[in-house]
Length: 215
Image (cartoon, rainbow, N blue to C red; front, side, top):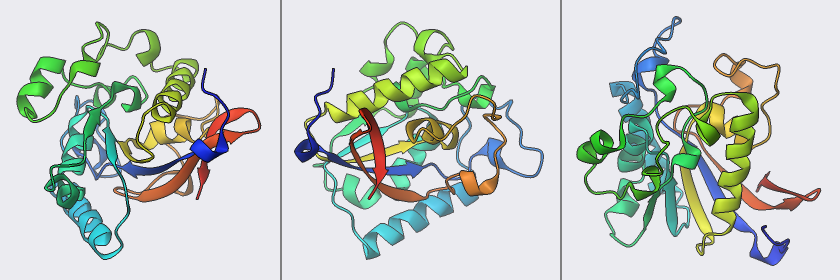
């Protein structure tokens, strides 16, 4: 149980990944498993890097989804900070995407680790990920449970200023915006983070619930 303690509130920057291969065109192809960034997505991530160089943010940890599009966004968009070699990276399956489409399911851990050998994927070796079982199920209740667990995990980290690189749908669960009756994959644009958008929050208790509060 996370203790209520406002002085221990954390600063959390939520970043959505850049455009990926399943985000292209009016008829998005969600059948692509764990898609890569498109060239536009890479350009969006580089624009994020440029924005952060002009308007720096302070952070001491990166928590990143183990999916290719988030890892690639992190490598490009946060490159300047990564090059210092002093910012630790936490590859965390708790912040992977929601849903049951192939595009929402990561590659097998061994394959991802081969493609991104610089990172530690130990947290993904839980005997379940990337299967859609248990806390990783794609239904509303499981995603809400995973979002709660992710917030508690972040709250218990020793670092105080954290960047979380994650996904559009799961962000809505983290922010408690997703409703049971709403379609996970097709939402009005005003309810969706833009590609490579970065927003600042305070992670603290509000109304007896751990929440991300706009800062």
